[in-house]
Length: 400
Image (cartoon, rainbow, N blue to C red; front, side, top):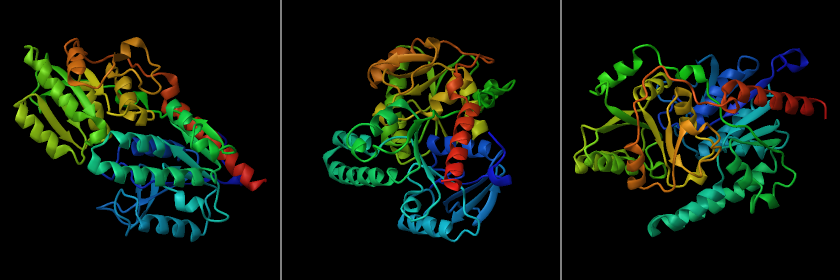
């Protein structure tokens, strides 16, 4: 990447409703944040987000300038976010050269006349969520269907105003090129750039595996599975808990570390209590990046079998597990399933029996261990491709 057009650093404004400092942030936000940190080595990057409890309206984190809309509900879309973000951009004395939208973050900005070129990063499609609503209980189905159809229309109309839409996986790209999006996006530039992680950041430090296990009263020779995700219905953590109960009923001892927060946590804790496996299932709560590395180091396999695998773009937690050298128990339809065979344990259905069967085959994975991460999922590769795109769009705007 060149240093900057016009003898100054390219100004990039990132709009994201949540960042890792919001406890409700998931892999999408963490991936976008890591990318922004890397881009800031070359560009002038500012992140606009919702109110972050415990922080002021403007602060610096990981070397990035963060601006917040103090009246916008933390980590959520709202009218205050839509109106506030558009007003923030309109009032900037120095206009950004490019706006980078994490998911739908910059929707209201893209609709303003003479806005800077907007790049939308798509981690999924609203239409996939809409189709998934058909599987929900009847009392939730109509509300989710209506919301999904509305967001599908909003995305169709917004993406056609975008300078580019970047998808994080093949399934998202295919979705945007299929009905109903293809009727609206025939002239929209759609690119695919996989999420990336810094593989070196997930190499366990000496003694880390033992230290994390001791923290959760796990012996050195215990078999341990890990789950890192938002605790909601889609992620299917309740299925993992049932699988742990089944696997241990055969006499084998396998524990589970659950990292993350979310609306399903009380129900999951009640499930563990009901199954009387409290000594085997450990809730870690919100995990920072170093804590994620420690959890992975302490584990022997990683679980990722969400209820609707098609909704997952390029799951960051899976990439982190592969970077740590862990095998991943997942579904056959996992997007971007291109890793080495030793990195995956494929099952056909996300049911407790199938997961339990694979858990019984897990072997101890002591550290150090080699990474399974491919180059296409390296953060440096993703940063280079995004940087080239942003420079191209800024140059095209400056020299139409």
